Length: 292
Ligand code: FE2
Image 1: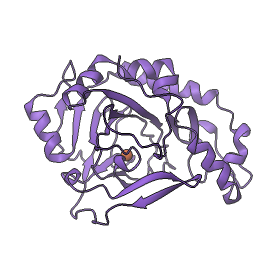
Image 2 (image 1 turned 45 degrees about the horizontal axis):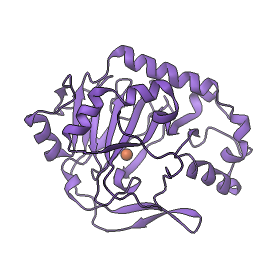
Image 3 (image 1 turned 30 degrees about the horizontal axis):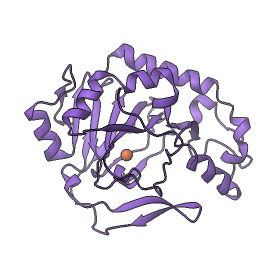
Image 4 (image 1 turned 135 degrees about the vertical axis):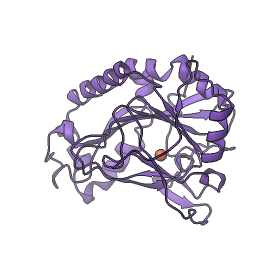
């Protein structure tokens, strides 16, 4: 398949968007900045993730990864990951007893959700002036780095991610979350690149994922359906940064190809906005910092 004709821009050195970039982001709800990170940066982040995986002991988490009767342990492991570095498996990567059925380096779906605070390399990358400049030019006055994820999208088994808005998971009043999604490898339709409904960030927030009675629930806020029409297929080169408006519906397909599609995702909210205590992601014990 040839590269889809999405609009891209060369990443500005100081991260600050010009009028054309700002216009594209306001129109589409996403923005692709090519060359935001260098090949060496991508290789360093991939290498660091591999080191973290090497230090991860899946046998120590069997109760978390085993079948449906362990749903509580699995939920707890996820629910308490907001201020930790934790490892999440692809569905089907382990048996009913929680033993991996593939090598651990091929079994992981993601690492989350505080790499940007707890790992020195990810912390330094996440606080580059270029990213701070970008956040500032998007209008964030007191940006707070709230969440990070290392996304593997493994060759052959990488699962799809369904249509959603990031504000569902990182809810603030007023809405403020912005996603920074860095392609560490070329992302294509074949290996599960991002898909987005261009312009649909102007619609309402449909759902909220929150703590309720000791569990996590997805609550409907507005049943307006996603707008029709084909999604934009965000095929991007390694080193490209995709900026995602918090209300933009986006997804990614499964990866049935022989190549992984690794990416690093960082979410930033406005520090002056209200971050409700019942948001799923709990940062009370480790309040999110800014870029400085
Ligand atoms: Fe997302």
